[in-house]
Length: 134
Image 1 (cartoon, rainbow, N blue to C red):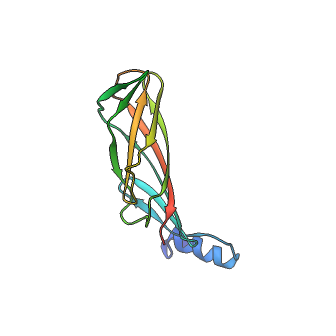
Image 2: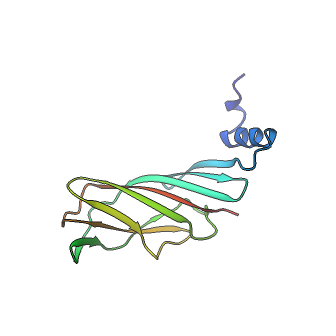
Image 3: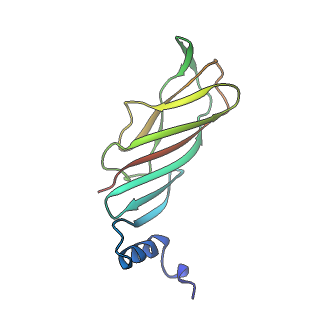
């Protein structure tokens, strides 16, 4: 029998986790604001997404060019405190990186892009955030 039409993936994960007496297991998973997320029985939560930065204005900062801070909303209500975020970047033309800023909150990821040249298009960021949901 195909139980997927009766139970959600998270319900199956939770039942298997309890049956196997696992110390942690997924209790909810879904998508929101372009992010995929998972909540665990322990209270941990994680989410990930890939997004385009759009056009950016870059300012010289020593040998690098730095963008103004930009913000992307996390899934609504996922975190109860500021999560830890890790970013990786794919871009056309040269050395590019990104970092979360101190303005990141439980609701929003704030980030800046820095690169070796002043070109501001064709940048995609993969973001992964881990925090607490309870």
